Amino acid sequence: MFMNIRNAKKFRRTLAALVSAVYFLLTLHVPTVLMQGSVNQDAWIQYYDKPKECLFPESIKEFSKCLSYRDEEAKKFDMEWTANHNKKN
Image (cartoon, rainbow, N blue to C red; front, side, top):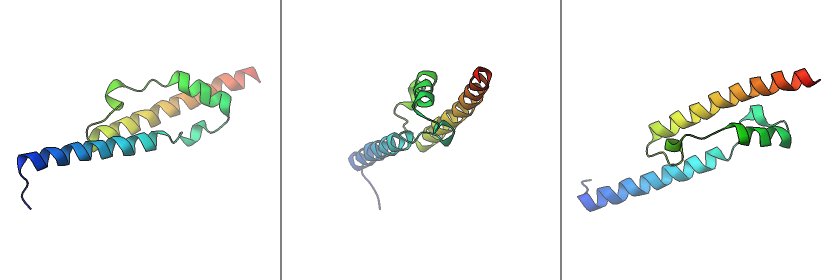
């Protein structure tokens, strides 16, 4: 199947929109380390600053990097949260 330039551009835009939609749906999922209650979730929202390039990733590769970054930040947050929470008890 050969595509002309107009169809190729339309396909690329459609694919980018699909990747953005999937990214949006996946980012609604809060990592499991954060499922400890609303105070923890509020702290996560204040802690996590999504990189600008992760707002609308243009490729699967960028999308994957953004998810990896979020997961690493979630691990750091969980360690800090646990350390601070244990100090108070």
